[in-house]
Amino acid sequence: MNTATGIIKALNSGIKHLAVKRFTLRYPEEKLKFVGDGYQFDPSTGVGIAGYKGRHMLFHDHCTGCQLCSIACEGVAEAIAMVKVPEEHKQNKKAIMPQIDYGKCVFCGLCVDACPFYALYMTNDYELSSFSKEGLIYTPAQLQVKPYVSQDSEIKITDRGATHG
Image (cartoon, rainbow, N blue to C red; front, side, top):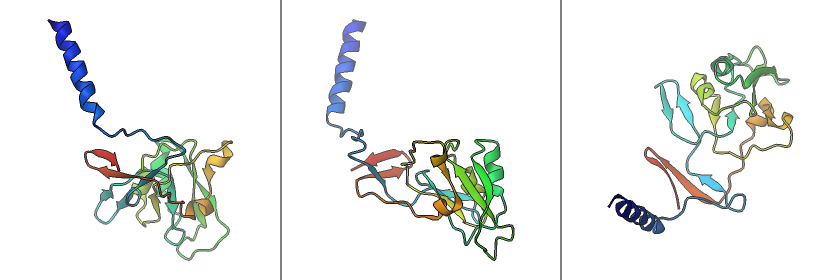
């Protein structure tokens, strides 16, 4: 009796999933396009704004070189190092900005949460592959460049999961 019940349950489960559109895409021919901006944090309200946690984006004109992003990362991945920048910014007296090593980054978003000046947020860019470890280290100048947005399958992130259409 138990064997027959198990077989019927398995067949029923399989038949239910035949009508569901599959979530697997044929990467790299098909790429994901996330709807909305990446993960952000609003320090004035203390609320994180939901979004995909991909490559970081740095606004040089907002960064003060306070090192809070680096301090937040120390206990997790130690992926952020503060480096000297040649440009002068009136709000950044130390002339230092974050450099991120994506070989170490775990994309937790604590660095974004720690930034009180809206200088750092995460984008929807997830293609960060490189042939060398040095290629995964993004300087402040590289973090300032807006990522390319693909026009492929859309992913909608909700409170209950993700779907594509």
